Amino acid sequence: MKNIKNLFGLKINIRSTLRGMTVVFLLLLVARLIGMIKELIVAYRYGVSPIIDGYLFVFNNVFLISTISESVMVFVLVPLILRWRISRSSPRVIEFKGELLGVMAISSLGTALIFVVVIPYMIRWEVFGLTAEATEAALQAAWWLPYGLVPALLATVVFAWAVAHERHISSLGDALPAIGIVTAVLCLPQPSITPLIVGTLVGFLLRYLFLAWIDYKAGDYVWPRLRFRSELWREFLQGMSMMMVAQSILVLTNLVDTFFAIRLGEGALATYNYAYRLIAVPLSLLSISVSRVIISFFSKINHSSENVEQLMVFSWLVWWVLGIGGVIAGIGWLASEVVVRLIYERGAFTSEDTIVVTAVLRMLCLQFPVYMGWIVVFYWLASQLAYRTLFKASTLVLFTKILTAWVLSGFYGLAGLALSTTIMYLLGLGYTFMAAYISASTGGSNDRSS
Image (cartoon, rainbow, N blue to C red; front, side, top):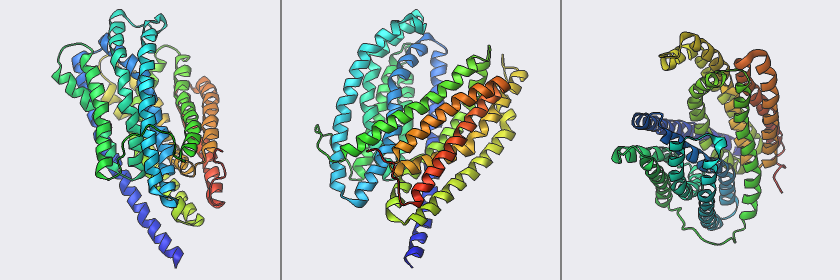
């Protein structure tokens, strides 16, 4: 009777999880549409001005750390928060949250000050090839943009708490940096970098305040505390260090495509980027909407159900996303040529270019099912704190990507390079699925960092 009740509860939770994925997908879609409007307005006002070159140079170098930090925070904090709340006590979690916010506030301010000193030296290096006007704009941005790291990094902590408690409205906060830039560009019409700087800083501050407001309304907000006493720090730092390295390794796989595409001759990198941009939006929408919901679901069932039930839910979700990904891949394959022609084929972009980009895009579409399956398994292992397995998996896919990209690009050009991504995720999926299956069958991960 107990097993029947548990299975019935799990089915309800699965339906709730699927609804959550749909809600997050729709909210992210709104955020991405607002981001596209921002790009159109900035392009209308600035065109391909050197001001944009200078702004993007500073922005990309400064805020990469916040992008990685948010991903790692979700990986590490969500399972930790739910495990301690379910098995131990909520006050200890709240105490740790205040201390983490305090440490993040100090460390983010220190990092910002370091960037204020270092970035101007980078701007002046001739190796980056910035023009005189771009250099001037970048130097202005370098004095102010790094301070946006303070609200941006504080937001990563509060956002992870929102994900852990399934406050899906938090995903709408992704649109606020874009709204800040749009507002500043429209209200400060002078053709300088100032509106971009003001809009970026205001946008990231708004996102943090929005997430803090959600936290406050839920009765879960706590002020930063400048101390280092919580017993959760040891577990957090173990997972944080391992996952930071793993995520950094995964970022390197994106650079592999750039390196091998350049070697394929003039125009090859541009062709690959045209195809990649088309698949990046739906791929990120689907993967983020799945990951932001599923990490808290997995963390809860790992502490509230028996092993056989965990294994059943895990296997069902893997096959479900593989099927959905397969359908999307098929639609993408059939619609590739039409999409490329509608979006790109005008001006200097000819019908011959459409054929080449379509071939690459079709190969990239094949990654949908395996990548989505990989996301589910990756977050299952994260919920069980199997950080060493995730680190090994990240290392494995990097070496797989380098090897397959080298071999396949040599034989099949850009299409082979695109196919190497699917093979990379396929091997990563196989490795992590076996590790997750063994973990679920034996009652949990024995692979936690220690």
